[in-house]
Image (cartoon, rainbow, N blue to C red; front, side):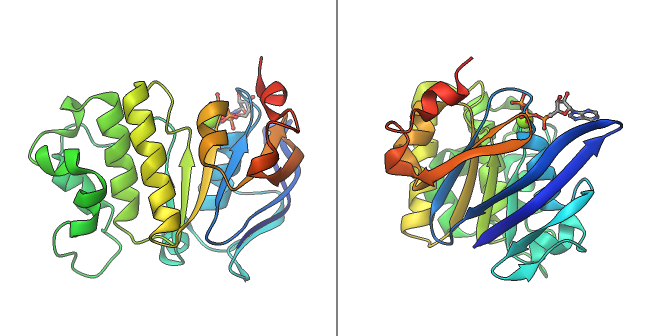
Length: 230
Ligand SMILES: Nc1ncnc2c1ncn2[C@@H]1O[C@H](COP(=O)(O)OP(=O)(O)OP(=O)(O)O)[C@@H](O)[C@H]1O
Ligand SMILES: [Mg+2]
């Protein structure tokens, strides 16, 4: 289980995360929903150790991560798919994937299951990353994060700017990672219907504070859509 306890973070004078506490249960898909600018990406960057936290703690399977740099958090089983994908446009698809395994001793090519999850990446493995469509680049970013064999996969708005048919594929793939591979997923989203369709558990963040959380099946009844609509 991922446990986030009373996290506080500031950018210069402004208080961005305010005593943020929530859990993402192991082997489940948790969605964290919030409008633009409420601190979702900042929170994920704190989970990965990319930005420092002022106070509070993050632990994974009972082990505190707070003192670890990002690469050691990857070593402890965290995988991160950043907002905007951040693939390397001039490298091939295969090279982009192999970079995801750079922390592993002598990666021997791309494992079968990655191409089985994303057949399009195998078809296009010699193309440059920058030549892929936005949706294909998103699949590449997820595939790259899977190369480090994470136990906890963290995704920042993977549906942003992506065509609907690929969004459906991504949703099915995330469910498979949980149901077939036993992975834990933390999905940050603003697209309610997508998150509602696949989440086991949810939390809502507004202006740096967690204001609701619960079972994914209760999202409609608890008016979560209204909490994040503008
Ligand atoms: N590097 C930074 N320096 C100063 N302020 C920042 C920085 N990054 C983000 N902010 C501010 O912190 C707040 C939270 O930003 P953040 O990117 O975490 O929000 P978000 O929920 O991910 O938004 P979005 O839905 O648009 O991705 C915003 O007010 C933003 O302007
Ligand atoms: Mg963001």
